[in-house]
Length: 64
Image 1 (tube, rainbow, N blue to C red):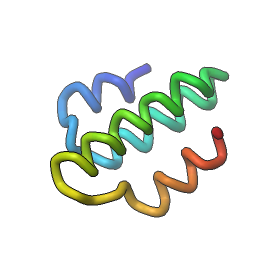
Image 2 (image 1 turned 30 degrees about the vertical axis):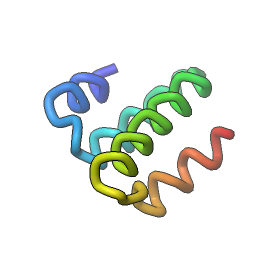
Image 3 (image 1 turned 135 degrees about the vertical axis):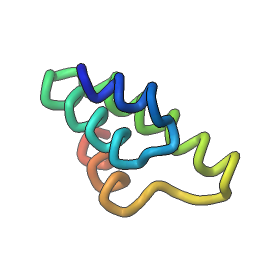
């Protein structure tokens, strides 16, 4: 999806990751959407010692 391109252009953009996870889920790719979220979460925690926003976490929790 186009959202993947947005993530490729700005890997730190939480909005881009939110759109990617939402788009993948809407296409029925729940496992891929959850994997995309987890990859972003891992980078955020490792590099910045931060969790993704509650909005993105809630979206991901709905996929699990």
